[in-house]
Image (tube, rainbow, N blue to C red; front, side, top):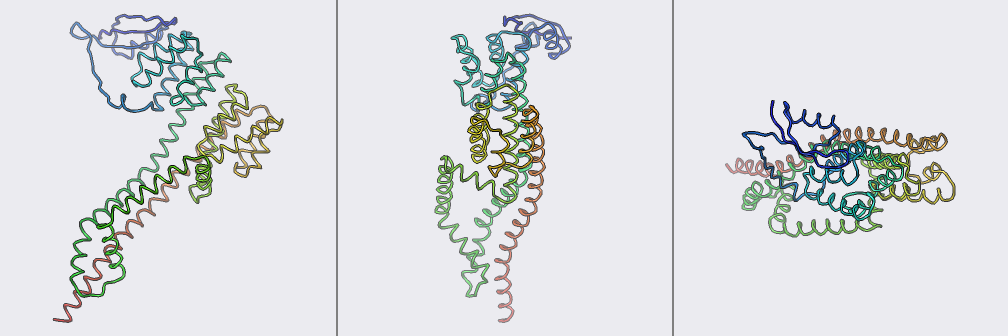
Length: 410
C-alpha cells in the first residue's frame, strides 16, 4: 500500500485536497469517482514528501491541438455534465489537468467568456481554429435541449471515428510511401556517385553509345549542371498549384478531377459520402434545424463538389421539397444514399438511416484503401525494378561493346 495526495473537484466545482492510502493511482481515482468527485491530480507520497516528476514535452508547447485532445476534452466534459457539476467548475477542472498548453489557454479564455455572460457555444465560437462549425452547432443544440452530456459524448464518438478512419488510411499508404522514398533515394545516389564515373569513362572512348546510354548521359548532365533549374521548376509548380486550389474555383475544379480519377475517384466519393451522412445524421439527431445542419455539413465535407451539392439542398428544403430528389438529380450521389434518405424521410428516421449509411461507407473506404495499397505495391516494385534495369543496361551495354572491341583488336 502507498500514500497518495490528491486534488479533486466536487459536484459544485469546489477544489478538494486530501490524502489516501491505496495500492495504486487507479484505485484512488476509482474511489474518488465513487464519492462523486473528479480527480484533478494524484501524486504518490514518498520519503515524507510528494514525489515530483518533470515531464518536459516540447511537442506540447509547439504543436497544435490534436484530435486526441479534442476527444479527451469532450468525453471528460460529458462525464462532468452528467455528474451535475456547474460549467465553470467543469472548465476549471479540465484546465488544471490539461497537458496541452495551448488548449489550456483556450479553456481558460472560454471560462473567462462564460463569466462575462457568454454561453459555452459562444465561447467556443471565439476559437474557430480549435472548434469547428460542426462542434459548435452540436453544442448549441445541446444547450437548447438540455442534453449537453449526451451531445458531448456523440461529439467524442464522431471525432474518434474520424481519427480511426484517418489512421487506417495512413497505415495503408505507409508502405507505398516508403517504396517511393526508397526509389527517389536510390535514383539520387546513382546519379550522384555511380553514373558520373561511367559517364567520364564512356566519354573518353570513341564508341557509338546505345540509346539508353545516351539518355542516361543526358539526364546525368542535366542533373549535374542544371539541378537548380529542375528544383526551381518543381517549387514553382508546387506553389502555383497550391495557390490555385486555395481559390474557390480552383478547389472545385481539383475536387471534381479527384472524383473522376480512376481507382482513386470512387474512394474519394465514398469518403465524402461517409462524412456527409455521418455529420448530417449526427446534427439531425442532436436537434439542429435542418437548414443549419445542411450549412454546417456543406462546410465540413472535404470535397467542394459534394459540398456544393449539399449546400444546394437548402433551396429544396426552403421550397418544401424533400432531400432525396435533388440528391438524385445532382448526378454525384450514389443510389444507396438516395434510397436511404428517401426511406428515412418517409419513416421519420432520417438520422438513423444516415448513420447506417455512414457506417457502411466507412467500411467501404477502409476496404478500398487497403485494396488500392495492395495494388500499388507491385506497381511500385515493378517501376523500381525497371529503373534499376534501365541504368544497368545503359552502363553494361557499352561496356560489353568495349570488351568486344578489345577482343577484335587483340
